[in-house]
Length: 313
Image (tube, rainbow, N blue to C red; front, side):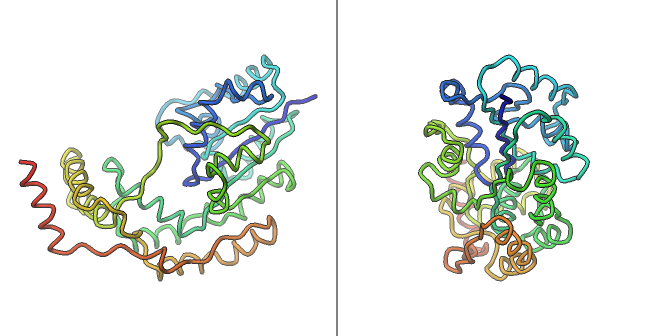
């Protein structure tokens, strides 16, 4: 009997890190259940090197072993477990036809099931905006509208049906399992619990110290963005951000307004209708109250930051 490969391809911003942490932490608990989480191709928690070898998009800067897929097959040959789990959100960055077919050839002889979680496009973009803007090492310093315009003009990834079609071509449409991230979050233990249920696993123990991308207040986010625009040194950016988090600790709404969200959703409405028709998933409607935009920075906010600085000095 050939081994079954369960390949979780992300996407980004859908709880991938905590799922990978859980799989890695439970590696030995998986084996009595007949599941194996390989070592080959792992960076941090997920099989990112396997994805990088196909996509050519090495976002971590570490050299990628061109023989990493061969090493994976050798590792799988040495273990008795019949079910194998691979996980990397970077797999969903492989969108070229030749690249996905090449990945399919690497898994020839195995039975493959593909799992993917998708997020409504406006929520995905806001999460990316939050992460990239608050990271003082990231060059992202566009305001929210410029950021949205740039992504809407050139972001093939958000057209989910276009690249899912290629995965279905390679592995078969019935082998591609598509889920709404919002629906998965309703499960016990969220995405971790949902994925465990889909594979028939005992509940994975969630990490004690999960690596989670926390949302911050719109005011704190805008302060770190402005520090980048003004080209503050990294150390001062970090100091200012820490001050801003103390001054404005409570999440006060996202950086995107309801009208900005509606614009994004309108652009991908036909795509999402296609998702519903093909895979039976749908995204919730925009809730104006839940999706309120954080209040803008005012002079009084700057005085609060100044007070924090004086208290610290």
